[in-house]
Image (cartoon, rainbow, N blue to C red; front, side):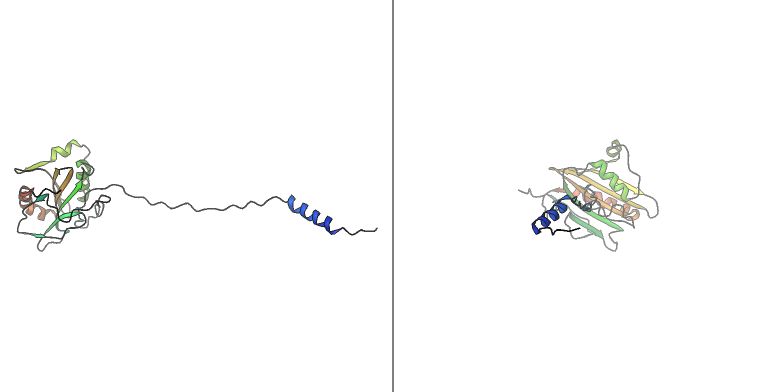
Length: 216
């Protein structure tokens, strides 16, 4: 049998035809999902230190986004007992006090101020109770019923006392003042024996709070 040579032009057409008949290969790419981070959006007042190894409230108060305490607030002034040692303010604390010879875990006194009601008394009181390993209150009506009133000629404070008699025995006393769209928190917390010893001085301190210079 005689074979004839295929002309080059015809051979190119045959090759191109075969290539075009092949199915296009599909390639799949797997893109990893973007990782997400859970953020705790609860924002409450700072000034509730870890006491006696109870870290349930450590750093949970934090501060409001974009908020910091005024470096030189003059809206309120007060007279601190001479037994109290003045501490350094922080980005959130307006004032800090301690007792000579006691660590902040044993006894801590703080003054903070935040815009608005900072979540409301019900949330705040239950947060303070958790720091003392106390069960939360379930009825908001119990909050106002448990409040004591400490007042002077200028202001009236709602004061909340919380005690845990377990080992170690812890306690807190917090004075709350609503003023010009802000909530002020005056807080005494630590070992129960130290808190009870400072209770009278703390309430006298609240009665000393009075208006300062009006800030423009």
